[in-house]
Image (cartoon, rainbow, N blue to C red; front, side):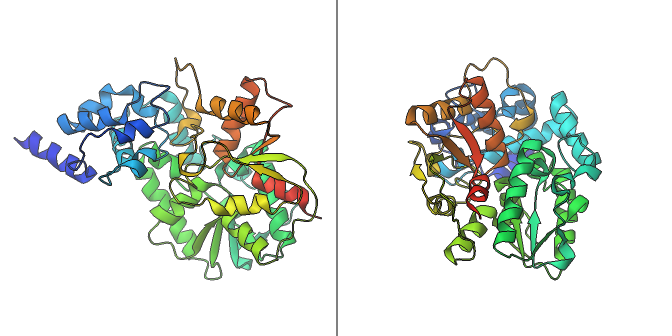
Length: 377
């Protein structure tokens, strides 16, 4: 009787009693066609068993990218994505997790980033740029872990700096004091480390009375700060929102021609989860000479790249196809020169797909800010 009561409380906490098993979540899930992952079946199993039993039996819970397509399509406003996060948290608490996940969580605890690199290396991306400290500016540019440490993404952070300086924006960074936002570890189930990071970051950000806005490189950081940091005082914007506003006000002028055929890949954490669709397109359409075309699957129907939800560090075996492969082949068939992205994870996964599909020299993946930087005089 006690076990039944505890299970009922667990199900109620997840808000699952309203589930009518219509299957819209699974029908919309981008992974459903490629893997055994079935979110409707998983919700059904949770309704009929204990969370502990499901977590220990369902190895496919690590396949979910937490893109939230399931949540956005649910007619009962249930959050199937949160079922995955809660099941993962059970495994994290029990220490029953894949080695690569264990290493990521350990790195964040020790180095405050998931890439297993020393915290002292966090500001190497901006060597020679002589950036202001956050205490001296009105706006904080929050770089994020991947743009700070990954050599490919460092170019994106540098392009953001170039544009902000061109627009004469008064901005600064936290340098080596910047720490992980906690987005991916929360989605991997380590909700305790996330709570600690949220508390630490909120204290840091709110401690700067001069900072009125925070601009992020990554949609994952943006989503976390905006929707999961309830005590945060500064306004949070993704760079596409901020740069689009600079262009509209005439504060940033894109002057040089860029005669390329470009399409845009909507990141899940920017589009599906935060409805930011127009600003990235406004930036691209403001580029002189550009020919902009849309993917057939765009905006809320955009195809997930499989980089979110911790999947950057999880290898899924026995999968014949990847969503990123489908995406780059679609771009090839459209005859585009460039797939423009606005997310570090999308850039990495799609670039890997370009290489694995032998499309190097035919299709290029670029962050929007790299395109913007090429048009600045």
